[in-house]
Each structure stands twice: as structure tokens, then as C-alpha cells.
Image 1 (cartoon, rainbow, N blue to C red):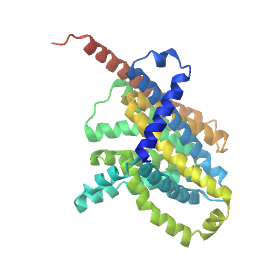
Image 2 (cartoon, helix red, strand yellow):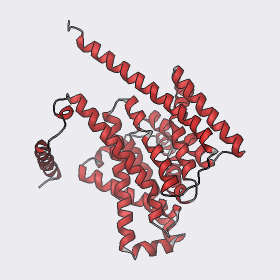
Image 3 (cartoon, helix red, strand yellow):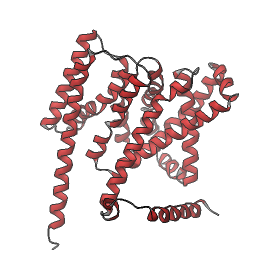
Amino acid sequence: MSISILSNAFANTLAATVSRIPLPTIWTAGSTQQRTLILGVVLAVLSNMLFGILYAYSSFLAPLSGTQVFIWRMLAMWVALVCYLVISGRLGLHIDKLKALRTAKQWAWLLLPTPIFLSQFWLFMWAPVNGQGVQTAMGYFLFPLTMVLFGCLLFGEKLSRLQWLAVGFAALGVGSEIVRTQSISWATLWVCGTYPVYYILRRLQGIGAVTGLLVDLTICAPFALGYLFFFAPSSLALVSGSAFFIMMLAGLGVLSVLAMKTNVDASQMLPVNVYGMMSYLEPALLFVLAITVLGNPFESAMIYSYGLIWVGIACLIAHGIRQFRQARRNMQSLAKEPIT
């Protein structure tokens, strides 16, 4: 029996099961567009929850260091992603996209963002267990604001008053933190300063998220193996001799791919503004986890500077809500117009 037949059988069984569940009226009576929106919101929330779990994952893998957890995560993600693409029959699709790259220049541009991606994933696993969890979460808070600035500077996008207010409040917050501490965390700057570069490069290349992830992980895999064999053989021995660590690292890979997959699916189902607003759930969750579960320090004096940044984020959310309502009104107006 082929994979496609199994997949169709599973889908039919799932549909039959769902049809017996008493679902809310908004789902059963709503339009296809409304159901897509609801499903997109559910996937976005699930994605952010999974990223939150991954943020605290390192603390459960002691005595492995943050760097060692990062290495194992890259290998586990690569295995999980390749298995998923093979089972779903989509591996050939992504390979064909890569085969379309003909010149050395195209390949160079493809590989250019990879070091940024790897450094961000390393920081994501290293920071929570090394006292930089709060600062890294703040970098993710600032990331959408820096994306707004990059869009303005590189693509000539016009900023609304709310967006200018958001940037202004964020700048005041960062400035206040610099004055208070006479410095600013390198982790914060690295997240909000380099992640936009990664996404912009991928956007200019026209490379999808899954294809880019496959490339990044495939490049990393041999270096990760080399690191384990030559620089961390004790880590290799610890994991290979423990069923607990093998299961935990397998879960790390599956959760990572599932988080990425649900995030990509949500981005395709939701309007851009709604997806952008949902993306603030992740840094908020990371921030809370860093303070509560991971015990990273948070001083009361940080409330003022971080509060200004959160005010800026609130302005961005208000801007997104306004745009979404305007787009919905435009769609309703078009739907009412007579067809000529």
C-alpha cells in the first residue's frame, strides 16, 4: 500500500471522527474562510507553545551544555525533517528547487544566511541555561520592530503614525536600558540585529522556509558530527549509552520540526497582520519561562525600559488590528459590488 493511500485513509478517518465531535457553532456554521482563520490561530498558538517548550528544553538535559544541546538538536532536526519530507513525498520538490540553482553566485547567496541561522539556534539553546534567557527573549520582542525599520530602509515601505510611535518607544526603552546598565546585552542585539538579515536574504532569494531549513540543517550536519567525535566525545558516549537521553533528543528533533511546520502552516493560513500579532506570543512566553522556570535574573529597575518596549509592541499590535479591519471592510465592499 502506497504512502498516498495511507495518507488518504488517515484523512478520511480523521474527518469522520471530527464529524462526530460536538464543535462550536462558529466552526460548523462559519464559512470556509472563517474556519481557515480559526485553524490558523490554533496552529499559531500551538507553534508558540512548542517554541516555549524548546526554550526550556536545555535545562532538562543536564549535564549536557547549551552548545552540546544545540549540536544534538541540529542532528535530531535534520533526521526528523528528512523523515517527514520522505514520508509526505515532498523531498523531491525541495531538491528540484535546489537543482534550479545553476550558478556559483546563486549558491553563494543561498548559503550566505546559514551562519546567521545556526548562530540563532545556538543562542536559543545556550542562553536559557547561561543567564541570558531574559535578554534573548527581549531580542525576540525587538525583532518585529527592527523588521519594520529594515522594511522602511531597504524596501521603501512607508510607516504609519502607530509604527513610528512603536519604533520611538522601543528606541527610548533600549536607550533607557543602556543608560541604566552602561551597556546592552549582546544576546539582545544579536537576535534583533541579525535575524532580520536572515529573513530578508531568504525573501530576496525566493527560498521557502522549509527549503531553507533543509539546506541549513544539511550543511550543519557533518560539522555537528565532527564536533561530537573530536571535541565532545564524552557527550557522544553519554547519549549513546542512555535510553533517556536518546528519547529526549528524539523528542527534541520532532518538537523542533513540528514547531517549524505549524508556524509555516499558520503563516500561510492567516492574514499577514494577524500572523504578525500572533508572533508576539512566543517572546512573551520565553520571557515568562526565563524568569519563572529557568530562574534567570530580572531586576525591578528593568521594568521601566522593558515597559517602554512593550508599549511600542502594543502600538504595532494596534496598527495590525487597524489594517486587518480595513482589509476586511474592503473585502466586504468588493463582495457587495454587482458583477458586470
